[in-house]
Image (cartoon, rainbow, N blue to C red; front, side, top):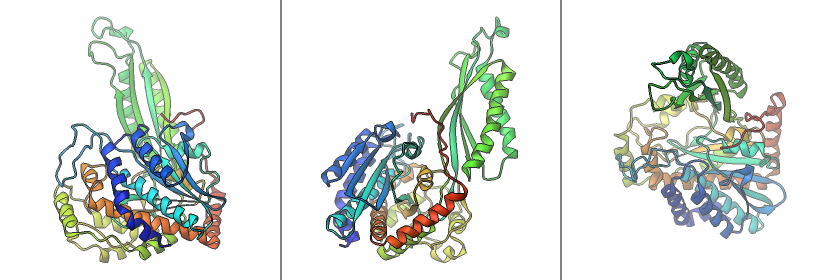
Length: 467
C-alpha cells in the first residue's frame, strides 16, 4: 500500500479537520472542541480511545492493532492568546484580543492523525503487525502536558515515538532544545495605610521587585545559553495608598540540560527567600511545570530523512508564493541564513536563494551542537522512548514564531502543504520501523546507551498538578 498516496487522496478531509481546529483556536488545557473533533475522527476510523490521560481532560490515546512494536505519533492542538488573525497576508484580527494558532498546532495535530490513520490501513491490510497510537497532547505552549503524561506512565510500553513541527524549512531535528521549569513566587505581606502607618505594613510588592533585581544580577553569572524570564502576575492590588499584602511573579528558567536548570533553580530560590527576609514577608513557592531537553536518536532521524527524500518536498503554487511574499513584507528582518547555517552547517547556503520567500528544498541531514532557543515537552518523551522529529515548511522564510503571520499561514495552502508532507513522512517512517525489526532494535540500542550514563529524572516533582 502506498501510504503517501493514501494521505494525498484524502487531503481535503485532513485540511478540513485542520481548518476546524484553526477556527476553534483553544488555549492549553481548554481544547475541548479540538480534542473532541480529533477523537471523533479517530473513532470513526476504528481506533480504540482512552481519554483523560494523566487526569487531563483534553488528553487522549487512540490505538489500532495489537502487540509489538508499539509506535507512537504525537499530536498537539493548542493555540496562543492574543494572536487572532484572518487568513490574509496583513494584520487583521478575527476577534480583538482573541486566540490564534501562532505555532501551527492545528497543522501539527492533524498531520500526526493522518499519519496514524495511514499506518492503520497498512496494519488492517496485513502488511505489517503491531500497534499504532496517536497521542493527543494538549497544552504544549505553557503546560508541559507530555511531561505529565510521561510521569503518569503513558509511554512506558512504547517502542518508538515520532513527531513533527511546522517551521520555515523542511529538515530533521538534529539539534537540542532547552530544558525548563516554570515557578510562581507568591509573597505574603501585611496591609497598612501607605501614608498614616506604613511602618505597620510589609510590602509584598517590594519583595517581588527586590527578587527581580536580585535575579537580574544573577544573570551575569550563568552559562551563556541559560535564560531566566519573569512576569509580575499580581502587582499588589489597585490602590497605591495601601501597602500591598499580596504580590506574585512567575519565572521560567531555561538551560540546554535539565541538570543545568536544577543548578540555577536553588540560586533563584535563595534570591526569593532573601527578598522575603529583606521585606519582612513570607514567600510561597508554587512549582507549575517543567520539561527536559531533547535526547536525539540518530537511527530514527536517518530514517525520517530517508523518507523525506522519498516523499519529496511540497510544491507551492504561484498564488502561495505571492501570499508569502506579501506577508514577508510585514515580518521583521532577521538573519535566517545565519540561523539555518548554525543548524545545518555551511552547505545549507547553496540551498537558500537570496530572494527566496518560501524554502521548499529538504535541508541536509546534519547534527550540530547548536541549541535551539526554545523548549518542547517532546523532550520528556525522548527520555523514555526513542524519539525522532522533523520540521516542515509551513511558513514564509522570514516568519517570526508565535505571531499573527504564523496564524494566517497555518490556515491556508502553505500550511496545508507542509502538513500533508509531514504526515506522509511520519507514516512511511512508522511503517519502516514496523516492517524492519533490525532498524527498530538499532534505535532502541542507541537510546539505551544514551540513558545509561544519565537516567531520566522527571522535572516535575511529585504532587504537582497539571493546572
